[in-house]
Structures are given as C-alpha cells and as structure tokens.
Length: 392
Image (cartoon, rainbow, N blue to C red; front, side, top):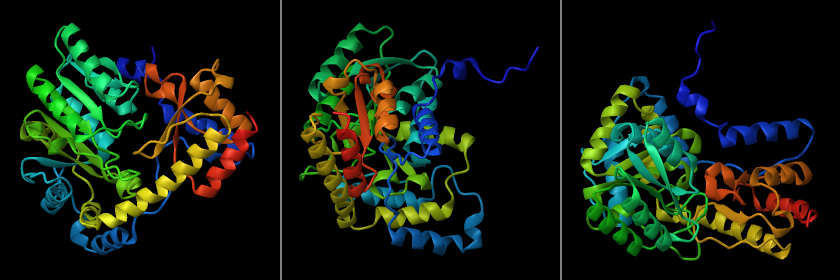
C-alpha cells in the first residue's frame, strides 16, 4: 500500500488559479507567442531606490543576519504606528496593536488559524481574492458567500440576511476595499455601518487594505480602523506589495484589536522566526516616505486604466473605469457570452496572446467576468488592445 502523501483537505483544493494560468502562459511562450500578461497583480515597476539602498546598507551588518522576531522588530512596528497616525489619524500602540506579516496573504491565513475553531462560520464576499476563502477552509471554518457585485450597500444587506439565517451564528466578516477583483470602493460612511452592525451582532471584522494607495480621480481610500469603535471589533491587514512595489519582499502588517493581534502574534511565534531584519528596516524607509511617491505610482496605473478602458469601450467591450485598485473587472463581451470565463481567457491567450484571469477563480459569482491587472506598460497595453480588437 503506498504512503499517503496528501491530507484530505489538500485533495479537495482545486488547482490554484494563478498556477494553472502560469502553466498555460508558459506553454504559449514555448510556442513562440509573445504573451502580454494581465493575470496577476504583480507590480512591474521597481521598488523605489531609497528602499533598496536601505536594504543593501543593513544587510552589510552581520548582526542583521541572525533570527529576527515573528512579531516584528520594534522599529518597524513604531513605523506602522506613525503611518496610521499620519495617513488616517489613527493611534496604534506598536506594542499591542500591530504585528508584522509575511505579506497580507500569510497574515490572513495565520489569522484564520488564530481565531477560528473548526466549524466556525465566516461571511466572505463572492467573488473575492482567493485567500479570503481558502484561509477559512484551511482553518476548518465554513464559508458563507455574500454577493458583492451589486455594490457595498446591497452587500451589507446580504450580510445581515445571511447572519439572521445562519446556524450557528457567523463569527467573522472578511471585507476588502478597494475590492479585489471587482475594484468596488467605499466611503468612510460605509465602515461606520459595518462597525455598527458588527457591534450589534458581535461579529469580528477583518479588513484587507491592500490597495489603499492605488486610487484615481481624486478618490481617497478610507481605513476601517479610522472608524470610531473599529478597534473594539476588528483588525486591518496591509501589504507593502502594491503601494511600494515590494511584492517579492513579502512584508506587511496587521493592526487593530489588541486581543486579535495577540492571537495572531502567538500563532506566528510557533510558525516563523520573523521577516529578515534588513527587509523590515527597508520597509521603515517605505512607510516613512513622502505621500508624493505614492501619488506618482497611482498616476502610472491611472494612465494605464484610461488607455485600457478607453480601448476596450471603443472596440465594443464595455467596461467601467474604477476609481481604485490596479485592475479592470469586465463582463465577458456579448459576442463570447456563451463561453465560461476560463474558456474565454484561454481563447484570448491563444488567439490574441493576451493573458487575463477568469472570474471563476475568485468565486462562484465571478463566472461570466474576467480580471485584468494593469501591470504592463502603456505600449504593451496598446499592443494588447490591437490584438484583442481583431477578435471583435
């Protein structure tokens, strides 16, 4: 009898969306196709030089090569506190209300393990970024998918209806604004409604703030923690990947309710020895950098958004211009509406050399849509539009 090489949990997992897409892209490139890649939200511009320079400086110190701390070095956590105070007017105690995470994906996964018991029910948007779903599944929780495509106010109504109907009552609500993949954004008033509802229903809130700084047309993305009473019932998770082009560095933080942060810090102390100290010190440089740097990066994405959206609309593929996030979320055009989102994405890859993410990879209600990450330069975007137009 062969040895058992996978847990029952792993056997239930479908192939990870991006892994399958990467395999298809690699196969296309082996055939000589110049793939223009809009699949993954993987920033294509470099990490700002002052951040890189700080890493190089600190890595020369041999003492920095030793184990770090899983909670985060004190200087990094103090920088997180300064960041919240400067950007949102939020007071964060660096000793009890903040913890470093190895990117928000790891932070959300370990947070689920830290706060969920087997069988606990969790309210999660549908569609949404996969770790919002799979962190719950890995922790043994049960998902209650909540439709989000109708907008934030309808979403909250669906949340309450699901809560009333559920047995046992949901323990956690996971939200993410600006939202991945739909790009839906909210105003500060929305978070007031969330906090009021969560206190009434005694539900923990976890907010993923990954796209805080990728904003357009004068829009400013609010922080959940800036809402009065938010720290009583929830936490916020932030990644350095998008705002600071530090995707490969794998660093971010969670902040908010001290008991939740304490639980996350405790489980991380058993799971990892912390992020490499030079990376944390370099991240301090990022967090303390001028807001003007963030606006310049957002302007790059805004120009790409305009070129892509204008071009798609001109070819007869209607798409809205989002006011935040680094994506376009588009319905499969009428000409191809009989195709499933994965089949449509494969067709675009094979016939136009353009790779995009099928909406089905983000949840059941993502079927019929595709997501395009604005991670190719404007010249490549125009090339992609020219290739796609031939199919219309």
